[in-house]
Length: 339
Image 1: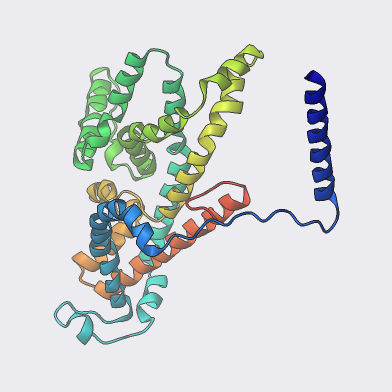
Image 2: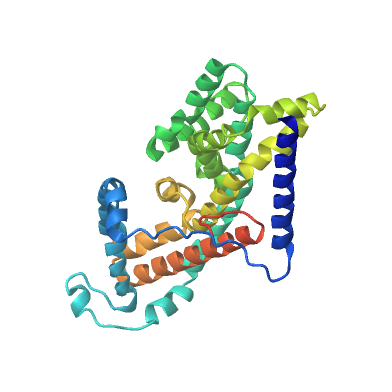
Protein backbone atom coordinates (compact mmCIF):
# COMPACT_ATOMS: atom_id res chain seq x y z
CA UNK A 1 0.00 0.00 0.00
CA UNK A 2 2.78 2.38 0.90
CA UNK A 3 4.61 1.51 -2.34
CA UNK A 4 1.60 2.43 -4.47
CA UNK A 5 1.27 5.75 -2.64
CA UNK A 6 4.91 6.56 -3.23
CA UNK A 7 4.55 5.75 -6.95
CA UNK A 8 1.47 7.97 -7.22
CA UNK A 9 3.28 10.82 -5.46
CA UNK A 10 6.27 10.45 -7.79
CA UNK A 11 4.00 10.57 -10.85
CA UNK A 12 2.35 13.77 -9.56
CA UNK A 13 5.76 15.37 -9.01
CA UNK A 14 6.87 14.45 -12.56
CA UNK A 15 3.63 15.89 -13.99
CA UNK A 16 4.15 19.17 -12.12
CA UNK A 17 7.75 19.43 -13.29
CA UNK A 18 6.72 18.79 -16.90
CA UNK A 19 3.99 21.45 -16.67
CA UNK A 20 6.43 23.97 -15.19
CA UNK A 21 8.98 23.24 -17.94
CA UNK A 22 6.33 23.79 -20.59
CA UNK A 23 5.46 27.17 -19.08
CA UNK A 24 9.14 28.17 -19.12
CA UNK A 25 9.49 27.42 -22.83
CA UNK A 26 9.72 30.51 -25.08
CA UNK A 27 6.49 31.15 -26.94
CA UNK A 28 4.43 29.00 -24.59
CA UNK A 29 1.00 30.43 -23.98
CA UNK A 30 -0.39 30.60 -20.51
CA UNK A 31 -3.87 29.42 -19.78
CA UNK A 32 -6.41 32.14 -20.47
CA UNK A 33 -7.62 33.95 -17.36
CA UNK A 34 -11.39 34.10 -17.22
CA UNK A 35 -12.47 37.73 -17.56
CA UNK A 36 -14.80 39.19 -15.00
CA UNK A 37 -18.18 39.86 -16.49
CA UNK A 38 -18.86 43.56 -16.83
CA UNK A 39 -21.77 44.76 -14.73
CA UNK A 40 -24.49 46.70 -16.49
CA UNK A 41 -25.64 50.14 -15.39
CA UNK A 42 -28.89 48.66 -14.11
CA UNK A 43 -27.02 46.12 -11.98
CA UNK A 44 -24.75 48.76 -10.50
CA UNK A 45 -27.75 50.98 -9.78
CA UNK A 46 -29.46 48.16 -7.88
CA UNK A 47 -26.29 47.55 -5.93
CA UNK A 48 -25.44 51.17 -5.07
CA UNK A 49 -28.76 52.99 -5.15
CA UNK A 50 -28.88 53.37 -1.35
CA UNK A 51 -25.48 55.09 -1.32
CA UNK A 52 -26.40 57.27 -4.31
CA UNK A 53 -29.66 58.40 -2.69
CA UNK A 54 -27.81 59.28 0.52
CA UNK A 55 -25.29 61.44 -1.35
CA UNK A 56 -27.91 63.32 -3.40
CA UNK A 57 -28.67 65.95 -0.68
CA UNK A 58 -24.96 66.69 -0.24
CA UNK A 59 -24.47 66.96 -4.00
CA UNK A 60 -27.49 69.29 -4.27
CA UNK A 61 -26.17 71.54 -1.50
CA UNK A 62 -22.74 71.62 -3.13
CA UNK A 63 -24.26 72.51 -6.50
CA UNK A 64 -26.48 75.28 -5.10
CA UNK A 65 -23.97 76.91 -2.76
CA UNK A 66 -20.66 76.21 -4.57
CA UNK A 67 -21.08 75.67 -8.32
CA UNK A 68 -24.05 77.91 -9.16
CA UNK A 69 -22.39 80.98 -7.52
CA UNK A 70 -19.38 80.40 -9.79
CA UNK A 71 -21.48 81.76 -12.63
CA UNK A 72 -21.19 85.13 -10.94
CA UNK A 73 -17.52 85.28 -11.95
CA UNK A 74 -18.70 86.76 -15.22
CA UNK A 75 -18.86 90.06 -13.31
CA UNK A 76 -15.03 90.12 -13.46
CA UNK A 77 -15.33 90.68 -17.24
CA UNK A 78 -18.09 93.30 -16.99
CA UNK A 79 -18.69 96.77 -15.69
CA UNK A 80 -21.17 95.17 -13.35
CA UNK A 81 -24.01 97.07 -11.74
CA UNK A 82 -26.46 95.34 -9.38
CA UNK A 83 -29.24 97.53 -10.81
CA UNK A 84 -28.60 96.37 -14.38
CA UNK A 85 -27.78 92.73 -13.55
CA UNK A 86 -25.49 90.32 -15.37
CA UNK A 87 -27.42 90.42 -18.64
CA UNK A 88 -27.48 94.20 -19.00
CA UNK A 89 -24.01 95.06 -17.64
CA UNK A 90 -21.53 95.88 -20.46
CA UNK A 91 -18.54 93.64 -21.12
CA UNK A 92 -15.13 95.24 -20.61
CA UNK A 93 -12.84 92.25 -21.25
CA UNK A 94 -9.71 92.02 -19.11
CA UNK A 95 -9.59 95.66 -18.02
CA UNK A 96 -10.60 94.76 -14.45
CA UNK A 97 -7.70 92.31 -14.23
CA UNK A 98 -5.33 95.04 -15.45
CA UNK A 99 -6.61 97.25 -12.64
CA UNK A 100 -6.07 94.44 -10.14
CA UNK A 101 -2.43 93.81 -11.07
CA UNK A 102 -1.57 97.52 -11.09
CA UNK A 103 -3.26 98.32 -7.79
CA UNK A 104 -0.69 98.85 -5.00
CA UNK A 105 -3.23 97.99 -2.30
CA UNK A 106 -3.94 94.61 -3.89
CA UNK A 107 -0.24 93.81 -4.24
CA UNK A 108 0.27 94.78 -0.58
CA UNK A 109 -2.58 92.45 0.44
CA UNK A 110 -0.98 89.59 -1.51
CA UNK A 111 2.37 90.19 0.24
CA UNK A 112 0.68 90.26 3.65
CA UNK A 113 -1.28 87.09 2.88
CA UNK A 114 1.80 85.16 1.76
CA UNK A 115 3.80 86.42 4.74
CA UNK A 116 1.14 85.23 7.18
CA UNK A 117 0.84 81.89 5.37
CA UNK A 118 4.59 81.19 5.40
CA UNK A 119 4.96 82.28 9.03
CA UNK A 120 2.08 80.08 10.18
CA UNK A 121 3.29 77.21 8.00
CA UNK A 122 6.59 77.23 9.89
CA UNK A 123 5.37 77.96 13.43
CA UNK A 124 1.73 76.80 13.49
CA UNK A 125 1.54 73.77 11.19
CA UNK A 126 3.92 71.54 13.28
CA UNK A 127 2.11 72.27 16.58
CA UNK A 128 -0.78 69.75 16.09
CA UNK A 129 1.75 67.09 15.09
CA UNK A 130 3.81 67.64 18.24
CA UNK A 131 0.68 67.65 20.42
CA UNK A 132 -0.53 64.42 18.82
CA UNK A 133 2.83 62.74 19.45
CA UNK A 134 2.84 63.87 23.07
CA UNK A 135 -0.74 62.74 23.68
CA UNK A 136 -0.07 59.43 21.98
CA UNK A 137 2.75 58.77 24.45
CA UNK A 138 0.47 59.29 27.45
CA UNK A 139 -0.30 55.91 28.96
CA UNK A 140 -3.40 56.77 30.99
CA UNK A 141 -6.51 57.02 28.77
CA UNK A 142 -8.27 59.31 31.27
CA UNK A 143 -5.42 61.81 31.27
CA UNK A 144 -5.25 61.66 27.47
CA UNK A 145 -8.98 62.35 27.06
CA UNK A 146 -8.88 65.16 29.64
CA UNK A 147 -5.92 66.93 28.01
CA UNK A 148 -7.36 66.52 24.53
CA UNK A 149 -10.73 67.94 25.61
CA UNK A 150 -9.15 70.96 27.28
CA UNK A 151 -6.83 71.65 24.34
CA UNK A 152 -9.40 71.54 21.57
CA UNK A 153 -12.19 73.30 23.49
CA UNK A 154 -11.19 76.79 22.14
CA UNK A 155 -12.01 75.57 18.63
CA UNK A 156 -15.69 76.06 19.46
CA UNK A 157 -15.17 79.71 20.43
CA UNK A 158 -15.96 82.39 17.88
CA UNK A 159 -13.21 84.71 16.73
CA UNK A 160 -14.97 87.59 18.50
CA UNK A 161 -14.55 85.77 21.80
CA UNK A 162 -10.95 84.78 21.02
CA UNK A 163 -9.94 88.37 20.19
CA UNK A 164 -11.73 89.60 23.31
CA UNK A 165 -9.87 87.11 25.53
CA UNK A 166 -6.52 88.19 24.08
CA UNK A 167 -7.52 91.83 24.51
CA UNK A 168 -8.27 91.25 28.19
CA UNK A 169 -4.90 89.54 28.67
CA UNK A 170 -2.47 91.29 26.31
CA UNK A 171 -4.18 94.64 25.68
CA UNK A 172 -3.11 98.01 27.06
CA UNK A 173 -5.44 97.61 30.04
CA UNK A 174 -5.12 93.83 30.10
CA UNK A 175 -4.06 91.51 32.87
CA UNK A 176 -0.37 91.37 31.90
CA UNK A 177 0.00 95.16 31.65
CA UNK A 178 -1.77 95.76 34.97
CA UNK A 179 0.43 93.17 36.68
CA UNK A 180 3.59 94.79 35.29
CA UNK A 181 2.45 98.27 36.37
CA UNK A 182 1.64 96.99 39.84
CA UNK A 183 5.25 95.83 40.19
CA UNK A 184 6.78 99.07 38.92
CA UNK A 185 7.27 98.19 35.28
CA UNK A 186 5.81 99.86 32.20
CA UNK A 187 2.93 98.06 30.55
CA UNK A 188 2.56 97.25 26.89
CA UNK A 189 -0.25 96.86 24.38
CA UNK A 190 0.30 93.88 22.08
CA UNK A 191 -3.11 94.25 20.44
CA UNK A 192 -2.35 97.57 18.73
CA UNK A 193 1.32 97.06 17.88
CA UNK A 194 1.81 96.57 14.10
CA UNK A 195 5.32 95.16 14.60
CA UNK A 196 4.07 92.18 16.62
CA UNK A 197 0.80 91.65 14.74
CA UNK A 198 2.13 88.60 12.88
CA UNK A 199 3.13 86.96 16.16
CA UNK A 200 -0.21 87.88 17.71
CA UNK A 201 -2.44 86.28 15.07
CA UNK A 202 -0.24 83.15 15.05
CA UNK A 203 -0.66 82.82 18.82
CA UNK A 204 -4.40 83.22 18.43
CA UNK A 205 -4.56 80.57 15.70
CA UNK A 206 -2.51 78.11 17.76
CA UNK A 207 -4.67 78.61 20.84
CA UNK A 208 -7.92 78.26 18.91
CA UNK A 209 -7.30 75.54 16.30
CA UNK A 210 -4.15 73.57 17.12
CA UNK A 211 -6.00 71.31 19.56
CA UNK A 212 -8.66 70.49 17.01
CA UNK A 213 -6.01 69.61 14.43
CA UNK A 214 -4.56 66.85 16.61
CA UNK A 215 -7.68 64.73 16.05
CA UNK A 216 -6.57 63.91 12.49
CA UNK A 217 -3.06 62.96 13.56
CA UNK A 218 -4.28 60.89 16.50
CA UNK A 219 -6.55 59.01 14.10
CA UNK A 220 -3.54 58.31 11.89
CA UNK A 221 -1.49 57.14 14.88
CA UNK A 222 -4.26 54.76 15.94
CA UNK A 223 -3.69 52.74 12.75
CA UNK A 224 -0.11 51.85 13.76
CA UNK A 225 0.15 48.22 14.84
CA UNK A 226 1.40 48.05 18.47
CA UNK A 227 3.31 44.90 17.52
CA UNK A 228 5.70 47.08 15.51
CA UNK A 229 6.64 49.07 18.62
CA UNK A 230 6.95 45.88 20.65
CA UNK A 231 9.23 44.27 18.06
CA UNK A 232 11.37 47.40 17.79
CA UNK A 233 11.63 47.64 21.58
CA UNK A 234 12.65 43.99 21.84
CA UNK A 235 15.41 44.70 19.29
CA UNK A 236 16.76 47.48 21.48
CA UNK A 237 15.18 50.53 19.80
CA UNK A 238 14.57 53.40 22.17
CA UNK A 239 11.63 55.79 22.24
CA UNK A 240 13.17 58.27 19.80
CA UNK A 241 14.15 55.56 17.33
CA UNK A 242 10.65 54.07 17.43
CA UNK A 243 9.19 57.51 16.84
CA UNK A 244 11.53 58.18 13.91
CA UNK A 245 11.13 54.82 12.15
CA UNK A 246 7.54 53.84 13.05
CA UNK A 247 5.43 56.78 14.24
CA UNK A 248 6.55 59.52 11.85
CA UNK A 249 6.31 57.32 8.71
CA UNK A 250 2.71 56.54 9.72
CA UNK A 251 1.98 60.29 9.87
CA UNK A 252 3.71 61.15 6.59
CA UNK A 253 0.73 60.58 4.21
CA UNK A 254 -1.55 62.69 6.42
CA UNK A 255 1.06 65.43 6.79
CA UNK A 256 1.55 65.57 3.01
CA UNK A 257 -2.20 65.73 2.40
CA UNK A 258 -2.75 68.54 4.91
CA UNK A 259 0.28 70.40 3.61
CA UNK A 260 -1.14 70.30 0.08
CA UNK A 261 -4.49 71.57 1.30
CA UNK A 262 -2.74 74.30 3.30
CA UNK A 263 -0.84 75.41 0.21
CA UNK A 264 -4.15 75.53 -1.64
CA UNK A 265 -5.37 77.95 1.03
CA UNK A 266 -2.18 80.00 0.87
CA UNK A 267 -4.18 83.06 -0.22
CA UNK A 268 -6.95 82.36 2.30
CA UNK A 269 -6.17 83.29 5.88
CA UNK A 270 -8.57 84.05 8.72
CA UNK A 271 -11.02 86.64 7.39
CA UNK A 272 -12.92 87.14 10.66
CA UNK A 273 -9.78 87.15 12.75
CA UNK A 274 -8.13 89.85 10.64
CA UNK A 275 -11.12 92.07 9.96
CA UNK A 276 -11.80 92.27 13.71
CA UNK A 277 -8.30 93.65 14.35
CA UNK A 278 -7.85 95.65 11.14
CA UNK A 279 -8.69 99.02 12.67
CA UNK A 280 -6.47 98.43 15.72
CA UNK A 281 -3.21 97.83 13.83
CA UNK A 282 -3.96 99.44 10.46
CA UNK A 283 -4.54 98.09 6.96
CA UNK A 284 -0.84 98.25 6.10
CA UNK A 285 -0.07 95.05 8.03
CA UNK A 286 -3.51 93.42 8.37
CA UNK A 287 -4.95 93.78 4.87
CA UNK A 288 -5.15 90.37 3.14
CA UNK A 289 -6.78 89.30 -0.11
CA UNK A 290 -10.09 88.36 1.53
CA UNK A 291 -10.47 91.65 3.40
CA UNK A 292 -9.37 93.57 0.29
CA UNK A 293 -12.08 91.88 -1.80
CA UNK A 294 -14.65 92.54 0.93
CA UNK A 295 -13.90 96.25 1.18
CA UNK A 296 -13.67 96.78 -2.57
CA UNK A 297 -16.87 94.91 -3.36
CA UNK A 298 -19.21 95.27 -0.38
CA UNK A 299 -18.04 98.52 1.22
CA UNK A 300 -16.94 100.55 -1.82
CA UNK A 301 -19.31 98.94 -4.35
CA UNK A 302 -16.70 98.14 -7.02
CA UNK A 303 -18.14 94.68 -7.73
CA UNK A 304 -16.26 93.97 -10.96
CA UNK A 305 -12.89 94.85 -9.46
CA UNK A 306 -13.57 92.68 -6.41
CA UNK A 307 -14.76 89.79 -8.60
CA UNK A 308 -11.58 89.98 -10.69
CA UNK A 309 -9.40 89.94 -7.56
CA UNK A 310 -11.32 86.98 -6.16
CA UNK A 311 -11.05 85.06 -9.43
CA UNK A 312 -7.29 85.62 -9.53
CA UNK A 313 -7.06 84.29 -5.99
CA UNK A 314 -9.08 81.19 -6.89
CA UNK A 315 -7.00 80.38 -9.97
CA UNK A 316 -3.73 80.79 -8.07
CA UNK A 317 -5.01 78.54 -5.27
CA UNK A 318 -6.04 75.89 -7.82
CA UNK A 319 -2.61 76.02 -9.43
CA UNK A 320 -0.93 75.64 -6.03
CA UNK A 321 -3.03 72.57 -5.18
CA UNK A 322 -2.37 70.92 -8.55
CA UNK A 323 1.35 71.67 -8.36
CA UNK A 324 1.73 70.44 -4.79
CA UNK A 325 -0.25 67.31 -5.60
CA UNK A 326 1.99 66.60 -8.60
CA UNK A 327 5.05 67.08 -6.41
CA UNK A 328 3.60 64.61 -3.89
CA UNK A 329 3.19 62.04 -6.67
CA UNK A 330 6.82 62.55 -7.68
CA UNK A 331 7.91 61.66 -4.13
CA UNK A 332 5.68 58.58 -4.07
CA UNK A 333 2.82 59.93 -1.94
CA UNK A 334 -0.88 59.69 -2.74
CA UNK A 335 -1.61 63.40 -2.37
CA UNK A 336 -5.18 64.65 -2.67
CA UNK A 337 -6.16 62.08 -5.29
CA UNK A 338 -4.58 59.01 -6.82
CA UNK A 339 -2.99 59.07 -10.26
